[in-house]
Image (cartoon, rainbow, N blue to C red; front, side, top):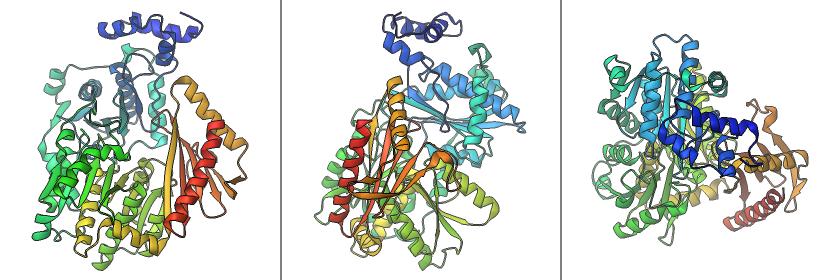
Length: 571
């Protein structure tokens, strides 16, 4: 087989070819790889890792791929963990997005859970990730699963597991599931029930529109200005929306309609589910290119604001008009600051802003939203990257009553207001940012105008992110070398600005769990942060500055990012 393949990899490959549980089509796919040592190595050099966010990987045959067998093994591990926890009358909810194979993977998972005696509620078609989180809480289920790879390229899919509070599994629980999966030595140990038998036994229950309607009503209830759109404003304010071929199409439209928006234009070419995401390079509202068709439609109809959601509708991007009438894509940090400003100012005006309110963000999210929140008297807390950590704090405060959750967000376009879910929700974010845009339009302002006012009041914050995609076993080693290089020989200055503090989160600092993240604070108040992605084969580098003007911030950012990325690329 060649020098690339060691005995362990070769044995794994051949065991799949000889396993009676593996179907003929999968074996044929593997047989066609004969002689392709590099491809066999990449598919079998490791088991696809069930990290703290579950599974995510390229679809295909092999232990390092997402397929019916790796999904089945993960689900059996999840079932074993649940049963070992002695949960009374265990149950689960499963949802999936528009990706290729997502419906089948969701059904596969449901039938494994059913075979383990776990009643499983399954959505009958694609649903948004926040709907899964909501349904787990509403149905008082023991766990939840959503089959999605968020905004990854079309060849990817994934599997995220949730706890009874509707939050993605926190590390302590994820580690128990990982251990349970590791104890499964053979596909013979994976139980599976036939669909008809599971339905007849009441172990597979299909969810209907009742849970959808309840979700829509709950999201609309998060509006802080429900009377705003009654009358002419609701009739005349124009929104363009793109679901980017994903699960946001119906819930976003239903929520906007219920909130009072009568003119919502959907990008027709991107309305229907499409696992290949054929109209975009990447189905990611963080990318300006993803809004090309939406901007064309907005120009045609004279839209006031554009919103877009990723395939599983947990991330929302917004596009607004600048002073020249051009449509510009807001960053996640900008949208977050605008929503915090609108939400908290409205609550304050109504005398509804609690004394113990809290906004929760991540360590790589801009301090601009923090400055706005504190202006309104809200506390601000930081978590590690990942909305599960925000959800975990929400659950703790809900139980203790110590603080009242107001808003949670990440720079990567994830937002939540309300306590009905424990994951980021693009649907409520789309409603809130459209409501804010409509409100400020009554004052003759666009969201761009309001953003400039916030800059003048709080400072010219500017953030960016760069990344390097490094695939395969060589990429894993290269990412480790970059992190080790910065950790073992930390820079003393960047672009002539002194590094004043190194925050190594692998040491469990600031009361947070240990995580492989490095953050460097600079003398002028800027910072940059290195973090290997937990869901993609890439290392992400975040940059944040605060300048005296837009031009000053841009200059600072360019200097720092250029210097840091030169060092990243040299390692």
